[in-house]
Length: 322
Image (cartoon, rainbow, N blue to C red; front, top):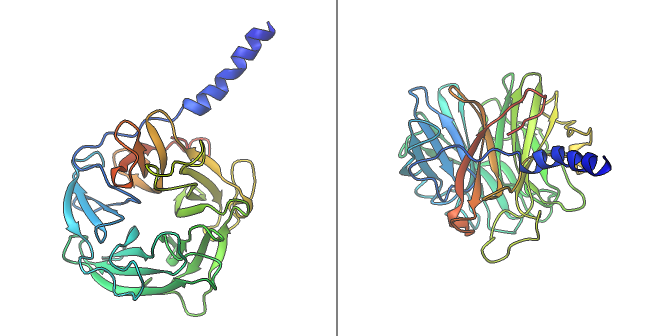
C-alpha cells in the first residue's frame, strides 16, 4: 500500500512537469523570431515584429500563418546615438487612437549603455514608420537598470512603460499622454527583482479580469549553441499578478515579485527549449494567447534558429496555465 501510495503521489508532479501543451501550429517563416511582438490590424492582418534586421516585420492572415517577411520597420536604424542603433531589439507595438507605436531597444549585448526609442505609423506597413528617437529612457553604469525590453500598458488612459534586463531587473515609468516620452517629473521604480540571480527581463503586462499579470523571462536567453547553461538555467517564462498595473505584484505563493517571486508559466519541455521573450494577445479566435520564441531541439540551438511559438492561456484558476 505504501508503494502504491508513493507511485500515486508522483502523478500530480508528473502532470506539472510534462503538462505543457506543445506550441500551436505555425506555417511560413517561423524561424529567427527573437522577442516577437504580435498585433492584429482591423482588416484581420496579423503583424509580427521581432529583434534583428532593423526590426523584422512579418504578416499573416492568422496567428498560425502563413507568415511572410515584408521588410524592416526601420531600414535606416535608429537616430539614437548609441552603439547598436543599427541592430534594434525587443520591439513592442501598440495602437493608440489611430496611431501605432513601436518601442524598441538600442544596446549591445551585456552592457548597460542602452536606450529605448519609439517610432509611429498610421498603418503598421513597412515603409510607413517614422523614427522619433529616444523616449528619454536611457541607462548607463550610474543607473540601477538596463534600458531595454520595453512594454507599454494603458491604464484607463494613463500610459506606463515597463522595461529592464538584469542589473536590478524590471522597472516602470509613467509616460506622457501621447506616450512618446517620459511624463514630466516621472521617475522609474522597480516592480520585479531577483536579488540573488538578477536575471529577469522582457516584462509584459496583460490585464485579465480584475488582475494585471506581469509576465517576464528569466535565465539565459541566448548563445545556447556555444554556451549552454546547466539544466534549468535556460530561459523560462514566469508571472506575478496585482490589482494594480504599477506594483505590488506577487506570485501564486504570495511571494513579492520584488523579492525573487515568480510562478513558472512555461519552461523547457519535450523538444521545446528555453522559451521566452514573450507577450500576450487576446485573439478573436483563440482567446488569450501566450506567444514567445524558443529553440526546437530537433532543429538547432543557434540564436538565428529561434522559432515562433504560441499557446492558448487558461485563466480559470486565476493564474495563467498553458
